Amino acid sequence: MKIAISTDGDYVSSHFGRCPSFTVIDIEDGTVTSKEVFDNPGHQPGFIPQFLHEKGVQCIVAGGMGMRATGFFNELGIQAIVGVSGEINEVIEKLQQGTLTGGESLCKPGAGKGYGLDKTVCDHSDDKCDH
Image (tube, rainbow, N blue to C red):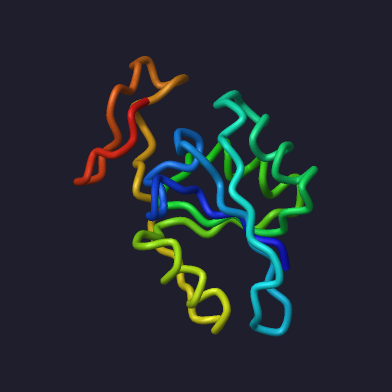
């Protein structure tokens, strides 16, 4: 299975669309068979899901993601796992073991485009994403 992880340095990025890069791994029978890092191609509605789909990605792992982005991934048959944080290598180990669990998105809805306000920061405590 080919999996993309929104990446900020050695850590999972708080928001998939604003991450500097994506770490894309291929896991077969619990073993990582390939690992590549791609620069974020740009934050435009629907563009990143299509970009990752063209690379054969079947799952995206991120700290946070809006409902619209989740919808784009769903349309392309890509599973979205949000609420994930930590070092990339630890996340990859959990993916290999099948123990990675997601949670609530680290970026809360309600203060972005379409809600009457321009969102300048995420609502999570580490403020790593810069909208």
